[in-house]
Length: 286
Image (cartoon, rainbow, N blue to C red; front, top):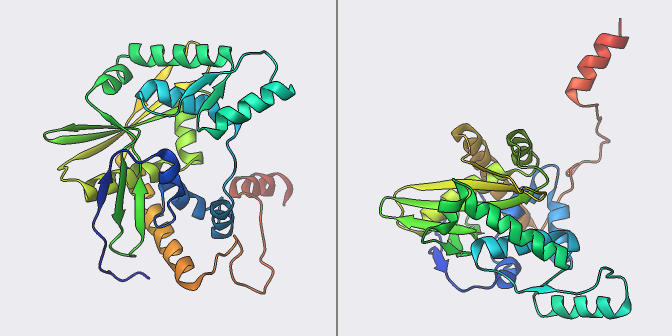
């Protein structure tokens, strides 16, 4: 499925819940396209999509930080008690999650409030998030080359007469620029950047779209790094998206979801990473 096809009209949807957005099976998101490519694979993507994981405590802090930073998101509920392993607290936490809220310890609530304060005080992030933006707007469009319906949900969308600015906020262990650079590589954020720009361009009348990352450390003093991706990296991300869309279209057309090995009856060879091969060859082989 690589030939051009008739496409469904794009749609910009306000008020769609995060649960409904993520549960949509008629479209694929940036995270889905990234999961299809290495180190993921179609087989793992399909399993994860068909068996959604329950909420994890490790994501609570990030969700809470987003809520306070963007002014939109789930309710934040402080669950009293230093220990959360008692029967009563476990039941309270389960009840909070069941109604779509995020349970936090008091220290965690204090932390995300301090993070939000640090964001507002940052000379770059503060003005971006204080502007007349719209949080969590859902955007759908169809890739014309494959007929695959795509979706994105910008954290913060600022619309000016000659520019639409998409702001993406991420919490991380370290917002030090080299750590941010590695995170872009490790999590394929360059794919997200390219897909969001392409989706916003396809679904709106924007003449120019820019994508800006805000990374914030989760440890005090909650330092912030604001960056715009280099164009070459964005081009790589867009090429990866195109490859993932073709792969996804083929999987849907054949209902075949291969692993990393693919369809083969031969046992493939494997080698160490290239750098280790070079180093050990120089050290041990004559």
